[in-house]
Amino acid sequence: MLFSENELNNIKREMGKLKDNIVLKLFTDFKTQEDGTKLRRCMACEATYELLKMLEDLSNEKLEIEEISTEENEELAKKFNVTKIPAILFVDENDKEIIRYLAHPTGSEFIPFLNSIQYFSGVRPYYADQILTHLKKISKSNMKIFITPTCPYCPATVPVLTLFALVSKGKISAEVIDVNLNPDIGMKYQVQGVPMTVINEKEVIHGMFTPQDLLDKLVGSKDRDFGGMYA
Amino acid sequence: MFNIDMESIDLEKIYDLIVLGGGPAAIGCAIYAARFAMDVLVVGKTFGGLIATTHIVENYPAITSISGQGLMDMFKDHMDSLNIPYISDAIRSIDKVDDHFELHSFFQKFKAYSICISTGTERRKLGVPGEEEFAGRGVSYCATCDGPFFKDKIVCVIGGSDSAAKEALFLAQNTKKVYIIYRGEEIRAEPINKKRVYENDKIEIIYKTKIVEIKGDNTVKSVIFDNGKEFDIDGVFIEIGSTPNSDVAKSIGVETNVKGEIKINRKSETNIPGIFAAGDVADAPFKQAITGVSEGVIAAYSAFDYVKEMNIEY
Image (tube, rainbow over all chains, first blue to last red; front, side):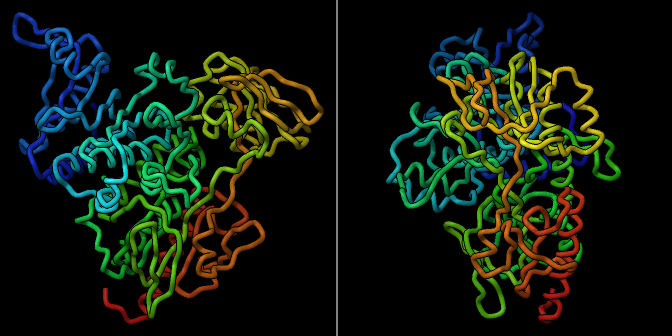
């Protein structure tokens, strides 16, 4: 993990904004060695663990990373339906899933991820009121967004989904899937362009969109055109 | 890191300057405005602008070579060092109310004494049958986003600009073959990129040809040329320029030219006092990141002068 001193200062400042204590569940393939250390064979797992651990260290004990081995704790992996690693889960106190990251949130994906952590801990996001006002009109939904680390539109689109997931407290759940790390899922959904968003396994949106667009889409408003943008 | 939580945004405040956009022109403007001690807010649909989709930038002075995203990350760091707030939102209309402007998004209302419109452009669509149907299934507007899905496949780039040449060069790294399909007689790339295209064995240019249809089943399989020939292809990358995002400017009567670009003078002023414009949305004949920054910086200075004349205390 390479962050400059300035970047680390910025991250520390942002982590200082966390309000409530939160826990993120990180599923990896670690195996506990005889000396007590954890060995992760999956490279993305190791990198993701290091990233989250750094955030935990900079959070004034507001953020706790709960690392769970899919190999040592199959029961928990099964409970949370984790079949892919690394997987980062934002779950509420009743273990209800809000966001699932099947991605290593680094590079341009880092800031949206950090913002999600802030909102998860109680920082009030922009648009919260608007989403909450319309939440009754939105049925329980799941949104999957497919991304790649080289896609410049993806970091602008991912936070739209995670914002809705966090504000709705999981009534609208979001999955962020890096196609490079999960080519089999990409194949299953025939992903040939990113960002690609799948809503409730039915509707597909190519390109990016704003919170307004998504709210209209979920509410079913017909007074505006909607289309993925490549601005 | 962006200050995008509500605690850092004051919707009641009348900002000295609200900058619309998230590209180099907008951020250049915001950085200078902040250094002029103006209360500045940036409202952008997406951060980075069109240049963030460019895989390599080699003509931004003092930076020999960098990805478009990397360049905009540096802009972001600079903006962050000045604590400039940024909101991801789209302004739909502007009204003049007393001595200030009101800017309306779908839900919010922002207020400012001056505005810099740097809303950039949107990718132009080809407008042929099959384009919409196969978007994301073989039709793409971003090589850096979707190029990796076409490893060892045959793709084409539609267009003859410098951007089209750069897209082809990027795609040639991993694909089996890249065809540039251009309606003109010679591609209009910068000489350095034209030379790279000519020297690349994987790239072939088909001149004086238009695509009239994109065909396929689940994904793109072929394109139809204007001479009726069907040409087998796995991916179509459309790079035929862009159209200015000037609707919001038009909503308050800002003058645009026939292309829809906002008319500005050398002070980046529009025909409406207090409204400035910069970057690709403006009518400058040569559009580059560096020229957009320049226009944005001038807009900041002009806005500073404009607000100062209103005798508003900073």
